[in-house]
Length: 282
Ligand SMILES: C[S@@+](CC[C@H](N)C(=O)[O-])C[C@H]1O[C@@H](n2cnc3c(N)ncnc32)[C@H](O)[C@@H]1O
Image 1: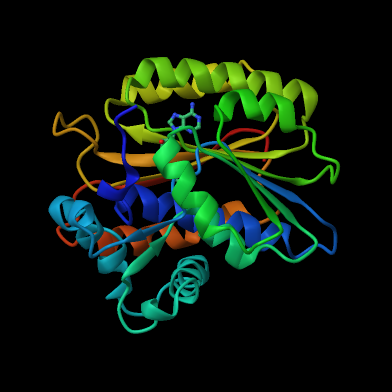
Image 2: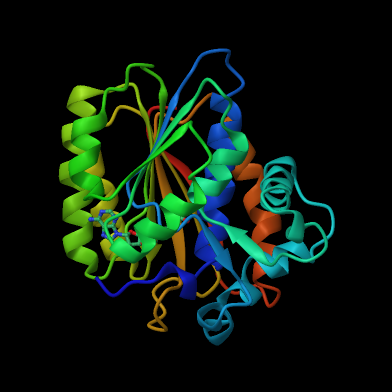
């Protein structure tokens, strides 16, 4: 396990992932009933964009920092930006501490909700534990997120969101692990909301990933993709996507409305594109 998210925090992949996360949690918390947020690959919770890793990689400059400099944004993108700024007072003027998925969730969950944060790398898990030491809504689990998913669902609340955001150190292996874990979770909890981040490199592998998801008993599947390089370019990561099982009502419309403006901000030369589609149900 060599992956360190500090190198990538706030990049274009995080922007898509976290915009969708904020949108899903905003919709889910609008209902007056408790929920569970389960983050299978949580990271350390918060990233200092002035750290050596972040500065060296410089990925936030082509991601969140571009969006922060954009003008008026559609509502879902605006809500995401507000959540980013609200997670840390130092972010009000200039975004310095970029919130990972756990911190964004902490911003949106209510006192009646619960968060379960799984992180396998000891150093990241220790930082995460420290970050959440004072927040009784959250439990940090230093364990394999796929295993935890099978063990922790269905939650007693019967409502909630699972974020699956692995490092993809070996892409095909990771796709297989996701399909298996999701299949097991859906058998136990078919009504949960599941959001899975995936890299967009070559379109053939994305299509195979989607097809395999559909074979796992998924009844409603919406996908949202944001690419900042031409699809199929061999440059490496061309963009990323979120596959959302059972998205809450109208979250699909809000995400679809937001993505073109986000793409314009992140890809000033116009390279790449956005795509939203229901692959099953609606
Ligand atoms: C992409 S990062 C997560 C970022 C985080 N979800 C966010 O949005 O801020 C992936 C994380 O998964 C951790 N990890 C790798 N394999 C894991 C596993 N099997 N179970 C749980 N965590 C794992 C890595 O150490 C890394 O911190």
